[in-house]
Every structure is written in C-alpha cells, then in structure tokens.
Length: 502
Ligand code: HEM
Image (cartoon, rainbow, N blue to C red; front, top):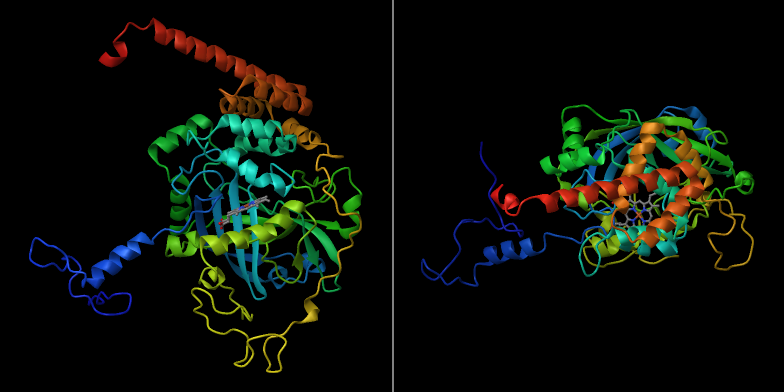
C-alpha cells in the first residue's frame, strides 16, 4: 500500500521529518528550517482553554427516533414529529474536576445533547439530576468557586463547599441527590438525563405549554460506593471513557426513553411551588411523564479533540416549536454559554463541523478570525439588511406567542415564599434503610474536618427536612470521630520505627 506524502500545513512535501537542518552534525540549527519551526509552533497551540465547568467529558453520536404521535399536539418542532429520526451528539461530563480528573468521582454528571434538526441545532444542555443547587444565577460563579480549588492551598475545600451550601438551603434537594447512590454512577450508560429547567412548547395553533424533558436510561441504574470508586480510581482514571467507548465499539448501543411532562400555560400560578424554580421538580402525580421516543448512541467520534473538546452546547439554541421559560437560571444560561464558546473556541465556533447545523444557514455576521465560510447571506450584493438584492430576510411565521408577564422590575428575594424542605423530604422518604445509611455515610465523609459551626448549621437544615436525616448524619459523624480517634491512638501506641521498618 502506498503511503501519502507528508507535507507542511501549506501542502509542501517534506523530505525529512527526523533530522533538523543544522550547520554541521553538532548544530547549531538554521532558522531556515521552517518545517521544524512550524512543528514546534503548532505544538505550542495544541490546547484551548478547558471548560470553566464540566471540563472532563465523554461524547458519542446517535439518533432520536420519535414514536408517540401525541407530542405533535404540543409542539410544531420537526424534531419531535412522529416518525422523525434526528442525528445528535451527546456529551456527558463531571462538573468540578479538571480535564485530567478521574472519572469515578462523586459529582453531578452533565448530559448535553445537540440535535442536528432540519430547522437548526437544538441544544438541550442538562444534567443527570432533575434539579440544581441554586435558583438565582447571581449565585452560580460563587457556587462554582467553592467546587474548585482554594486560591492559596490549590486544593478542593470541603469547608468552602459546606459553608456555601449551609448558607444556601435551596441546595438541600440537590445535595440529597448528590450524596445518595445516584451521586456516584459507575458510568454514563446507567444514568438518566434531565433538561432540568422548564422550557416551552409551541404548537401549530401557536399555543404555549410548559415542558420538562427527561431521558430514562434503558440500561438501568448502577452506582459505586465511595470505597468501590476509590478502588476503581486506583486502577483507572478513565473508567467512564472506557465503558462508553468500548460499549459503542462492540455494538452494545446505550438507549434512553425520552419523556416530557407538559403543563398548560395557565397552570403556572396554581401550585405551592414555582414551576420555573430549578430547585423543584413537578410531581409526577400532577404532570405524568409522556413517552416521546428513544435516544440511542451508536457511533464514537473519530477525533476526540475536534468533535468533543470543540463541541459547543448552548441553551440559546432552540428551534421553532421549542422555547424558553421565565426561569432565571435558564435566562442567564442563554447568555453565558455562547459567550464562553467565543472565548474558549473562537468567534466562528458555530461553523466548525461538529457545531455546524446540518440545514442551510443565512446570516449577516461578517469577517472575523477564521471566517472560512465566506458570505452566507444568500445573495452576492446583500451584505447588510434590509436590502433590495434578495438577501436572507426575516419570516414572521416563526414568531412565538407573546409571553404574558406583568409586574414591577425589582430584585426579588429568591427565598421569599419558598419551601426548600418539602421535596427533599419526599425524596428522603423514598429511600430504604440501606440507602439512608449510605447517604449519611457519604455526607459524613464529605463533611469531615469542616468547622463545627458550619456542620451544625447544615445539620439544622437536614433536621428540618426530616428529624431522621439530621440525626443520621450526626450519628455517622460521631462514629467517624470515634474511629479516627481510635486510629490515632493505635498509631501512637506503635513502637517507634515500626512504620519505617515496614
Ligand atoms: C446560571 C447558571 C449556569 C451558568 C452561568 C453556567 C455556565 C456554564 C458554562 C460557562 C459552561 C462551559 C461552557 C463551555 O465552555 O463550553 C457550562 C457547561 C455546562 N453546563 Fe452550565 N451553567 C449554569 C447552570 C447549569 C445547569 C442548571 C445545568 C444543567 C441543568 C448545566 C449544565 C451544563 C453542562 C452539561 C455543561 C457542559 C456542556 C458540554 O458538555 O460542553 N449548567 N455551564
């Protein structure tokens, strides 16, 4: 088999890729060796900034196939019409760890889907949990700072985490999930995905419904205990990448059942909970999940960097028939992601193959770094809008019905009128004795070493959720204290030099 000739990035054939050009066998080198300079210069530019959150991730391609014709009553989105099959990219991730972090860590898992629909890309950038830690975006950067490294020690700080959480009791629902079995899944084939926020559906009659998206794993749920995960991390730091990649490579394609909960627009004010509050679920008894279809992952990317690291998911990416809701967290995310991508990847990140829509694109954004798409206005002389030269123009058939909102603009206290205990209590009451004991132990391990004042504040919140919750975590902490004390006493009793001799 003949091999292709190695070239420079400008296409010139390279005669020698092993020996630099030097004035004599011992050097020095000649500046003229532009091939060497090109090679070193490219190496210096091989990294882009990692994502500020969700840096460690695993991705695969697949399809969504819609099976339930009932969904068409609620949305005109082509991607959700009966029988539609749409290509997609799904990137899973952990939140706090850096690009090189171990996979088997207790953390929320990201579940970000890019649907390449005939009406543009629809990105549903969700998690494996139906709720989140906070409900006001003002708190997001501070929350993330507590999950990342301390500025001086450069270590993760349980004190910062529990200080923030104990001062933000709206986090109780998500904390109860994170420290339960589901907080440490064995891999990402065995997790659910959730759009988490409330979004809207708009149908052919231009009626709006509120909607929540769910993806239920058809592989079942699997988790590790902290001890099991520690053992896994000792063996491999890439347990999730190995599991997902190998399953797809051998044709064992993971699948999820897509479901929606639908709320009529006028129901939004009828409940004790705010349906746009990201720390709350909609009880299934109020809004039963309706099947939509099946999501399957069936193809590994050819190049991880190009197709997963450079993938850019943004909640701003919606399509006709799917819209936003007043949820303040969602509103902030509509801004934040595209801003992050322009910085992390570059101005024209949406024209990279993995991010490019698979439908015609027409816009008047002009020039800028890496404009390799030329003019996409639809006509040569149309490089501004409005114009008389048949350039792409707006189409009011895609207008959404007006959002009915009235009231004063103010900084409303997000705590007012909120019950942050009721839903975590319902979750806690679902746990059997084994699940409760593991929850207590996981929390005690995570809180170990945190100042007592902060621990007491957090135990107060757990007790308000359920007296058994507070008592269980307190008891697990006391057991740990006794165990640690006896370990220390054992070590002190050891004759000097034993450790060294061993
Ligand atoms: C105000 C709240 C939030 C802000 C400002 C925010 C911001 C960000 C930013 C800047 C990134 C990195 C994007 C990139 O560099 O490509 C990111 C990633 C991500 N966020 Fe958020 N986030 C918020 C809340 C949430 C919530 C509530 C969820 C889930 C329901 C979520 C899920 C994700 C996921 C899955 C990723 C990784 C996407 C990927 O795989 O590339 N975030 N977030």
